[in-house]
Image (cartoon, rainbow, N blue to C red):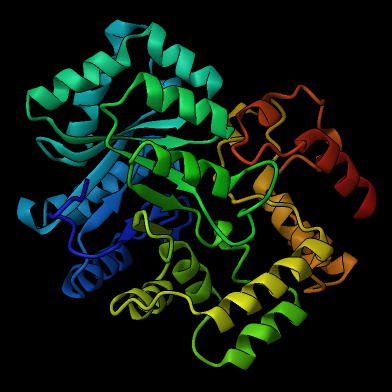
Length: 367
């Protein structure tokens, strides 16, 4: 199956937008949207949980109220924390249309499905509800995003053949990672004939700021940024029809557009550098956090887990000293040492990170 309304294989992921304090910088977002559309791209991706609901509202103010409906495609998601019963689903969907300022979504995804959330979706009859929404013209295509093991993905697609596409985390670091199993999940999607949307191609920025040895390998290639190689790697899989990138400023936007406007698949020489870089990054043993921030709402202590992990990764990647990493720790966060090991963060983490143990280690190493 293909989607002819999509102009190019690169989408604007709206999880990480330009911000001024805690508000979306709408002037900058306007400029980014204008550049994106003028460059021939048209796919935008959001969810209600992105930036505490501000992503949807910013898209209404900066995209859907400024452009005619034929100029863009908008993907949104049904996320399990926002409904508890079958009766909650349609009202939430209607609110999403209102928040985004549209009459329909081009793609509507069952968000972050795993074994647990899948059972909740089934109990609340969401699959039949979304099929009905498609029949009513309020959804054009039904898809899903996924964070679990290949056997769970196989089960979901077997039981729900109407799902048209699968959104997976694919990047060169997670290709064979036993926690993420990118390639194995990709193979399941291919087996079921489902086109793939890629999320986290640069792993939340982790594949941009690399250890010096890995960074030099890409610089010696002399053809593009670290992000450009990561995005092209993900886009080179034959069943991938869309790669999403979260862009927080015009520099990121311009770099990604230059990479994808006239897309070239990754070549064998570049793939060799990617393989070598992967080994270097793994030796540094950096924490594989993508800064999705799902854990923030679940932490009863108010620990800013992604920001703490980011500071510690700077230290592990030899980008700063131990004292420098302490300075990078968020000043408005409860310290890592105050973790009560409740496990709420670990349960919700898409990367399956042992968050309490990592916080304990960081507290000890950076004290």
